[in-house]
Length: 424
Image (cartoon, rainbow, N blue to C red; front, side):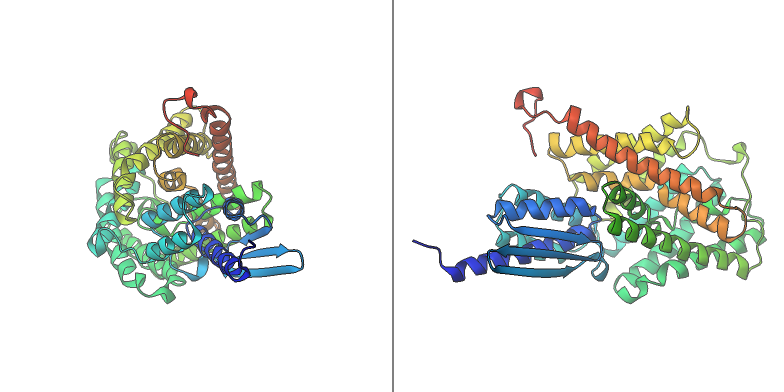
């Protein structure tokens, strides 16, 4: 008995709609384009459609299906027309993709779970949002080792920034100008503080409260996509990342120029800084704050802390022997291996969730903001921008080599090779 053509077309329509919605969600989760294409093609094959071709860009994805004389092209818009995803939503999206690749859920079930994911509320509400942002900022500030006065000022600025973010979260139209406005207000506050005797490096005060605006993840993913020969998506993400840095630098310089401040390049003596062992406490506070601020699932915090600690340890220990941004390479490699082991050997959260905190710890966005601001203010002739590019290349290469090392050495294909069954 031949299958009903109407039922076949309805099943195919549902599958293509599921692929489009899932691809859109993965792009909004920050997943690299080659991995999104891999997932969608694998899901199509599992569901009996061998002739589905997928082409993905950061802002749009196309799917082409053909069989004999029949063909169809579908399009779905990408990440930049929908709200950004929190960590709990990212984990759900990638869990749906993993289950669909294995054929454990149908396209209908996948669509229902994606719809439910978009409407999931923040676990901790607005109070948790503000408190988590404060802790995240405090953790980053401690890792930069300011003075106690600088720590208090950074905390106050973070509280003001968190209130602005709560207000703007429900007004998507503000997302374009918000980085400039926030950077201007914070730099103006620092400039006024210099008039009253503050002696603290400006960027040590400004980077922590602006940490969520820094496009470190975007810039790193762009380099990874370029390494995979996804030139269009990699180049477009890199341009978008540098545009965000330019907007932030414009706001920062504007705040200092408005108050005619020339003290932005001060440096603290070692005795004025908090203790050298405090940064390890900063890693804990930062990860806990990010867990609350980004509303990650409760089971994810411990895994996130392990991955963040490995990233910081790799960068810190290698920095004892290697000077400069290249130390981030070792932190990125160790972070990636740890995240993949957690996902596939211990059935933990998807790797992208556990190593997202590590991208902020490895600080490509911080390098970028300092570099662009220095060039725009005339303090640097271009050397800082090469430091940024070198750091990005090091982090991206570390991620790729870490993934290759795990796949080649730490992902046994037989159950007897390790005590945990394979979760691939």
